[in-house]
Structure formats: structure tokens, C-alpha cells
Length: 198
Image (spheres, rainbow, N blue to C red):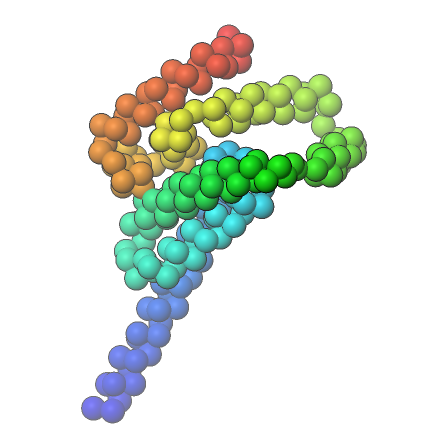
């Protein structure tokens, strides 16, 4: 009897380790793409990093024991919730900061300009790098101008490759709403990026 209990305990430990390993792999796979989505949504590197880390912690704390095939829509639902929370907090913060007369200094911008002036360590053709960067910048700007729900639908469907059903779960809306938001986003982006489509 004691022996059976020890075997069952060991099996439980092995399953927990397997689940932890699977969750670690899942998080490492989605981390960069989630960061890109968050950065496009909030426009700030550090804030986006905090949002992604908080989303990962939220998934581990609340849903680690759920089946692995449910993690993707659950994670992106948490991520989208954190982005919406950031918008709410930032709206309040911006209102108070502007009311109090605070302004952002240009130190961050100066540092970014200095880093951009360094030569490319990979030896790529500067004109091609510039063209690619220009296209990506135009795309990012266009995505940032989309209404939040359209932005979410576009990024989750196109960049993440989520199904309509998983996107609906992540966004907490109907599949029909996902299709509508996605369609409007694609239409707007095609108009905004017309020069890149031809």
C-alpha cells in the first residue's frame, strides 16, 4: 500500500514537471510575438514588456492546469485585457500630466538617433535595410492608427495565425465581430499602405 502511494506521488511529480516544461515552451514561443503586439498597441518598449510579463504571469497563475491547446486563446485574452487596462490607466495619467503641465524630455529620442547612426553589424545593403524599415514603420504606424478592436483582430488573426474562434475567445466577442473588425482593419490598412501594395 505504501509502495503504491509512493509510485502515484512520483507519477504526479512527473506530470507536473511535464506540464511546467510544456508551459515554459509555450511562453517562449509566444513571447516575442506578444511583445510586438503589445508594443504596437501601446507604443512604448518598457510598457509593452511589462504588459507581456504580466500576461505570462497571469496565464501561469490562473490557467497552468488547463489543457495546453487552450493556452493560446487564454494567453491572448489576458494580453488584450492588459492592453485595455493600460489604455484606461494611461488615459487617466495623461489627463493628470497635461493638467499639471509635465512634458516628456528628448533624452530617449537622442539615444535612439545615436543608435540608428551606428553601422549595420550584419553588413546588409543600407538602401534595402532602409526600404524594409520604411515599409515596416509605415505598417506599424498604420496598425497603431486602427481602433483598438480592429488592431486586436488584425494582429491575432494575421500575425498570430489564430482561428476566428480562438480570436473570438481571446477578444471576448462573437466570431461575427472578429470577422467584421478584421475586415475593416484589412480595408483600412490597404488604403493606408496603397503604395506598398502596387
